[in-house]
Length: 116
Length: 110
Image (cartoon, rainbow over all chains, first blue to last red):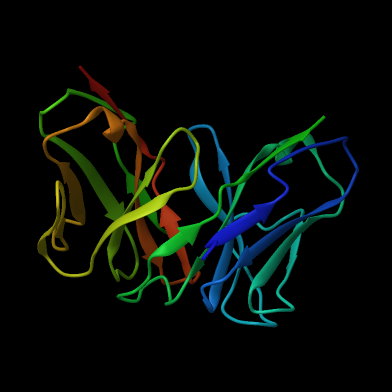
């Protein structure tokens, strides 16, 4: 099992450009999440999904969109990149709800995005 | 709202025991989780406490006191490879999401 994979690993964008980050999991998890991590800020939830075809906003959703057309994939889109979106982006998945007994989240290796 | 507080840095020597504290404020509590992250890599799950008391997993233990809104991660027989950032996290029942603390950077010295 590959677990959670993310593509690309690194990306440099210019202000105003768009891009899509892809997350894939092979554990048949219902729940998937996108986080961003900035220095000293911990992990902040951008959007999440509780199943195929569903998405919901997290703490910091502005400037991002997501789609979950297939259970194993969760896409994060930046329509018009801004320097404030320079960050490391992590995707995660879990079998259970965040409050459930089996709520362990499995993280991907991250995408390091720089917006100039 | 939800908030978590944990120390930003902790330093300890190899072979020692270290405790990383976490205090939280939530409107509804379901459990406290701990994650480890090495050098900005993928965070990995360490433990989850839903009830008061101590949970032990090898060299790592996690404690929860719901009445004090407090928990800690205890690392015993420290090894150099334990140098990492450690995050506590609680569930936000108003937003349906896991809220992470800002992380504690543990440095293990020889």
